[in-house]
Length: 432
Image 1 (cartoon, helix red, strand yellow):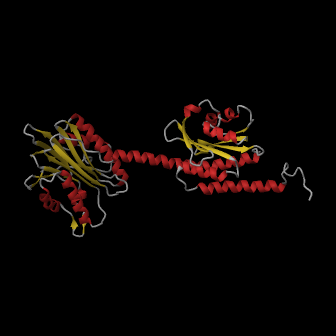
Image 2 (cartoon, rainbow, N blue to C red):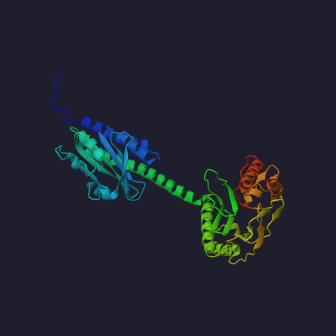
Image 3 (cartoon, rainbow, N blue to C red):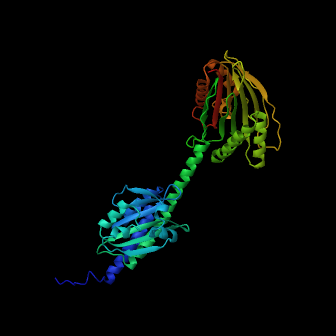
């Protein structure tokens, strides 16, 4: 059988057409294979798997790092390998220039004594450089990953000795990079938004309660959207020494928007009580802040300033803005409702809130709660304050932790699996 010795060196028209079809197929496969992937590193690894060896013998993807000023390198022989480097570390390398321009660079590699040094300009990691050099590369091709008007990274490809990148191969690589860049950027944005949401969610979660000399504090919080762990109800405790401000509130809206307003409300209360802990003053300041924001939602709040006197009792000044008043459970089982009321904050420009004062003796507990408790709807209608008042005496002297847990459990049993509003409870018991 006669063999044409130049056939492998000069591709026929059929070979060119086959290569063209193969390139088109690769571009389509990358576009389809990466769609829907929202994990950045996993998307990069999937890209490298799809292009080796069809387009290159070795590959690396350069991606934005989790922290500002960092980059993540994914690739090499180990599918699980990735490394984080600083952008400052590559400031003088060719890779840094390409990341600024988003262009394409093809370099023919000369396997001399300084091959690793040449490769390091585009592969800024010693392990990856050593891998690439061991393959006796013929060509090093770097293509910018450009998406939504910005260069988000780079695709670094190597073909081994005897298999360089021709012009059509470079074109295919650029098209692959364009397709992959959109998928990678979508995954990047998804992860970035996830990190932002996680940070915001953490800042909006109910705070841990401080240690207060001469008193015990406990709280319960159950958002309506339990998978979010945040909602429109809140509780907080600020102060020091023998002077503390307790607050419980409820934003009129729902979901993430309500949680954002909750965060602003908590911060406004914290700032106001730094200057004056009188509850009527705090509520007045909060009302001014929220009214000036022209928010469509309003907030109900109850504030209680708790100060310890010389006899070990706590004198508590209470003011309320459209919120259920606190309930005091005496040590002997008597139940009293603190007589306070007032307009919800954020509704009208100026409101004067009138406080009431109550004293807590040793063993007495004051309970503050949101309407997720009394307005919880079960088979017989709303749970109601009367049902709550009837429940409390059996827990006289039990302490705030037991009381909050018992109320939450009783409300949930009454709901019998039905949906509920946000629920917040805050209780303080006088005595160590």
